[in-house]
Image 1: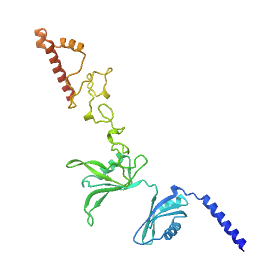
Image 2 (image 1 turned 180 degrees about the vertical axis):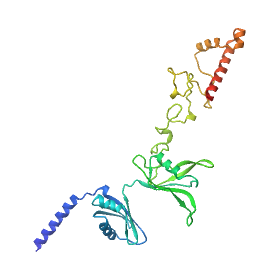
Image 3 (image 1 turned 90 degrees about the vertical axis):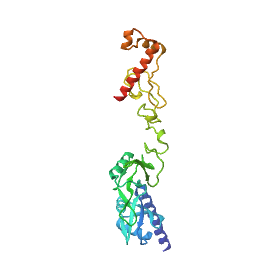
Image 4 (image 1 turned 120 degrees about the vertical axis):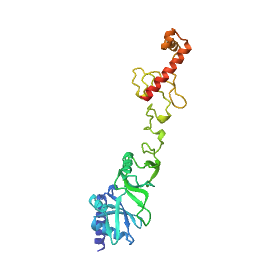
Length: 302
């Protein structure tokens, strides 16, 4: 009898060993289960109900009295569990362990801001809304308090949103707080962590196409010949660039070689001077300055 019992136990251990080898404890078959409701649900009650409605459970990790990680035997059982179930008066909600969906809140928005504007912001940031936009109410009332929230699906490229964003209001442009779980500081331009806007590879001056400054701060002058920005100059041989004043405007004077200036000055005459015959070098230089200044202003108007 003892020998027979020992052999039976040995066979059971071998079967268990074979079963463990065949089982696949995969991350993709693991879900996070949360129990919602006033009534207490034990772990054994949970496992029994899941087994009855969803299939074989091959792993259960305790996290809190109302939170467990369950690993299912197959994909079909996991999908059924993700649909949720009910035990007594409590709801059992399941979600992916590596879930990239989070609730994003926009705090204190004016009531007239349309939900479409929020969805457009999310689209520009490269994330996707997976629920409708909801309005938070003052406790015990049906009066909106200005905060909007919705569930957003993040991805490998975008894992966090900026701390704030701007909307157009009746009083002008205003910035509003954006919050969600696991939020980190990111560049407002490319939505990536590790640098600020001025250091972003995507941040370039639209005037000179160089990195690190805004167009209003650009010190690059326009081409003398075509009056275009350096990056858009259409001249076969780019014209001589004028200097800029401290206020960022192009100077009325262009730097030229001394010999070229003397030749141009000698030929720079007005109709009245032609009747007189010639003009002094100083007078010609003054007239050239006035002419170039007027040309520059005309181009700016066009």
